Image 1 (cartoon, each protein chain N blue to C red):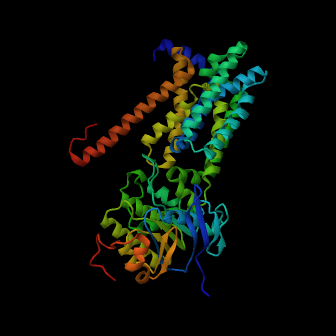
Image 2 (cartoon, rainbow over the protein chains, first blue to last red; image 1 turned 45 degrees about the vertical axis):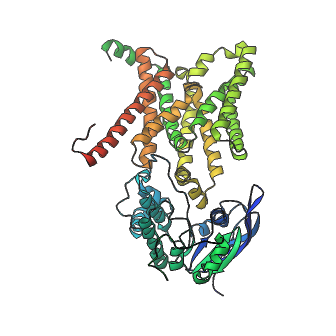
Image 3 (spheres, each protein chain N blue to C red; image 1 turned 135 degrees about the vertical axis):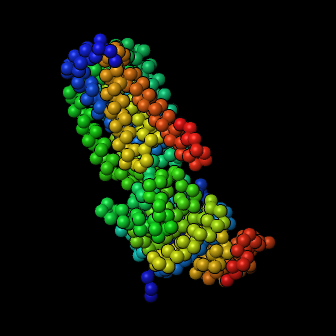
Length: 250
Length: 289
């Protein structure tokens, strides 16, 4: 039996006494790209934060790279170093005096290798030349690429993206997605990404998790994103793929 | 500065109390700027102001109990920091509202106590605005120790503190405990404020934390230069302010804060010119500033 990167078993999260995520179980195998889809308020971000130990869970268990996540989100540092997370909202406070190079180095590299590792990470993420710019001076697209460089500055095994394309125009979102897709292949990452872009999910993900408080379905995109499944998830009359990418059917 | 003011100033510089005052200004300015660099970015700068005001209660209690105010003030400040931190963690109110409640209540209690026991308020003017000329060698040793401790603490927790300044969820995803880091920082800030109050005064202490860091934030082009600049501006402002107070016979604490304010205004001007210049260069051949 192959190694499991992430194993979630009967996970439940409550907020204000109400269940937001209820009895969710799934597993991620190495070097797969899994999408987490569902309507607004379905609990996608909550699930992601709970399985990373950023918020407490009220039930169930999580194993990351073979290690159990503690009740208060404890995880051995060596394991956490292999996991990268791109939050949904990433907006450094105004006039933060921090250069791109300083920020990327905070991703975790020994001081002696800092310069080389930062340059390599920025080059991998198509962000070379930004080293001396302040983080607060970057455009939304540049900021996303720099955040990705923060993640790749040291080897990782699991990348978790929470609506990473939010705030980007369609072209920038497409470029960012292509970048993640290429990096996943070249770096051997396992990816779990929250997304509302169902066409992108259909084109590039190996597996889809459909969440609306509980997991409504999971499987290959052809199955999980069928019209019948999407209507069950989003409600009757839901029309997928109506905005763009019409020419890019699988 | 004329020759008439220079000669007495040079004489003053040979006096031990003035030398101690300059060293105290250098140390409290440097450490205030250094801690301020993090406090300003983490939006904890109001904490130093609240602590300064609340400290009046600690000093009053010390005087009433016949104890050295400095010895009472450090545990009082740490207790205040722990209490406020607990309230911020447990309540759903914002930190600034909670700080306001705690510090105005402490101030009110202190004033009520002072009104009942007037002997405790004998040195009220010195408590409010500081008495840097009355700093002893023991006070200086404590300030030097806290500067070393602050530098060590910030170096050891540098990555965590910077990431928390950037984005808290991102920091927590890297295994950083935001609560523990905030607790460590506010306790350090509390100790620094408590030890600096004798020199700076309860009303002006927050200026030592906020003004140099804000000026540095406007000018710095990296985090390392930001922290060095905040610390340097804090120290330089204190020394220049003290020299000006000696030369022109001004109260020392307000003179230092006024120099820091001038430094901030200069940074604001330079920052605006730099920004306007860059924007103008991109759009027209006339850079403006």
